[in-house]
Structures are given as C-alpha cells and as structure tokens.
Amino acid sequence: MPAPAYVRTTFQRGAYPAPARPTDWRTHAACAGLPDEAVFARRPEPALPALRACAVCSVRRRCLETVAPAESLFDGVSGGRLWRNGREVRIPADLAPERGLAVDYPDQP
Ligand code: SF4
Image (cartoon, rainbow, N blue to C red):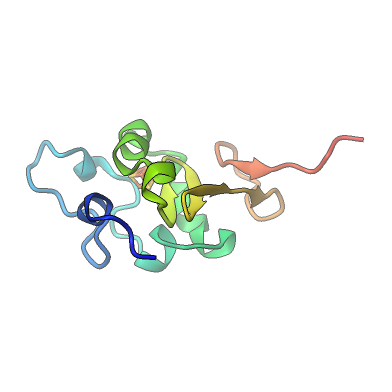
C-alpha cells in the first residue's frame, strides 16, 4: 500500500530529504544521503544504516511527529524505529548491538 500524500511529501523516494527552505527540519536529518533501501526498508537488516543514523539524529522527535507512522501506515525508518504498515518492527539484539537502537533483547533468565 503506498504511503499517504503527506508522508510522501516528507519522505520522498529518490529525493530524501527534500528541504524547501534552509530552516526545514529535514536539513538536519542524519539519514540524508542514505539509499531508499535503508530509509524505506521493511525488514531489520536493510534498515540498520538508517537506524544507526537515527541514533545520532537531532530531529528524531520532529521526524516521528511529522511521519506519524501508526496513523499513516508508514513503511520504513522514522524516529529511531523501523515501521511496517504503521506497526513497530522489533530489531533483534544480535543485529543491532549499538546503544540507542530499539532492539528486541532476549528474555532474562
Ligand atoms: S529520525 Fe531517523 S529517519 Fe528521521 S530524520 Fe532522523 S535519521 Fe532520518
């Protein structure tokens, strides 16, 4: 299912980020320049470069508020998390040992 228009204008494939003005929050996106395959990934492994960028991104909150993944049924990375059909995809701990990533830690004994 394609993303709604307001999501596409925020996260445009092939042109992300596409700032309209120098003050646009997207100019601060740490994922700028990453391939679409990372930013719009549906599975954890291809999303890791974007998730690593999120860990140091200064506009995480703004990104999450603008994309509103649950409401927009977003597929991809936003606000430090991976989303598929608007639901958060847990990242297995063995794929993302870095701090700051939303990972699915194994159960404690
Ligand atoms: S929070 Fe992540 S997806 Fe959003 S702009 Fe920052 S690096 Fe990109």
